[in-house]
Picture (cartoon, rainbow over the protein chains, first blue to last red):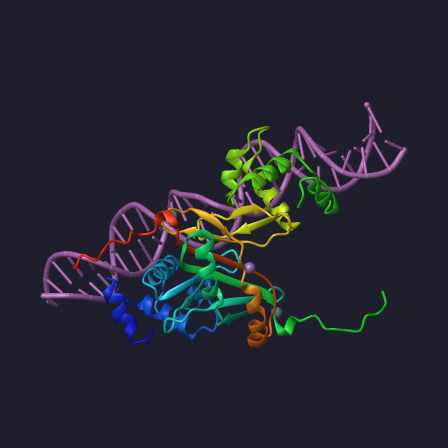
Length: 146
Length: 146
DNA sequence: ACAAAAATGCAAATCGTTTGCAAGTTAAGC
DNA sequence: GCTTAACTTGCAAACGATTTGCATTTTTGT
Ligand SMILES: [Mn+2]
Ligand SMILES: [Mn+2]
Ligand SMILES: [Zn+2]
Ligand SMILES: [Zn+2]
């Protein structure tokens, strides 16, 4: 989604391009990881924006396909801009919480199997991974014999 | 997880096998789909059990690996018994809400790619699918030429 | 600039889930 | 079977993320 297109995309869906929306969109496009509504709210610097407005706008942006909602088993959801129609998943370190993108998606390969097994037509999926990031890898030391 | 083993599994974790736990476990093992805390609560027939107790027990069972928590983008989480250490995913119909198990898991194949791309060691993942079930498939009619 | 449509701030409401505490139940050893 | 410590429960209150009603402000299309 090119920066210029957002206004048109919004207009097509009868949504206005407001100050809050522009700023939220900018924050999301600049972030290297998905952000929570509260994180976004705290990064809003210009004109004051209510947290409820952040929630309303995230939902609006999600509804028209500009933003993706992500569940990483936290108390809240995270949101990220969908750039160039990209499809990504995430992996979160179970030790330090670091989050990275995973561009591989092997689920398409699964769709046929699912179709045969259950008769469902696959439309969408969530795949979130959890593991241990390079910095948190347990150091391999020689066994100390108890 | 054989029915007899649950008591031992609980004991190993310093948990008691209470009336509520036994009944919740029974309900989960009988259900063909993951249930919400409220659904479980409503299915409890014997001695009265508080909803808070259902939540506490679901968490306890999850913590010791007897139960899996599932997020299907609803307002609540669902829970299912982990039988025989099985690893399953789910697919939910976007039209009627029907939920079925997906036994295929292609994520393992992805682990190597993730390891190479991000250096993360994969420990766990969530994969939930959304689509259209056989009953809800749009009927293919001949094009009417507008 | 103008009227209509959409969005916002603010405060209150929602709602799934959690928690403190006193009372009840279970586990384990005798 | 008792006895006690550990664990669990009911109940009501608290929590925290998210949503909503409504009066007011901003944005849009002409
Ligand atoms: Mn995918
Ligand atoms: Mn899997
Ligand atoms: Zn880490
Ligand atoms: Zn269906």
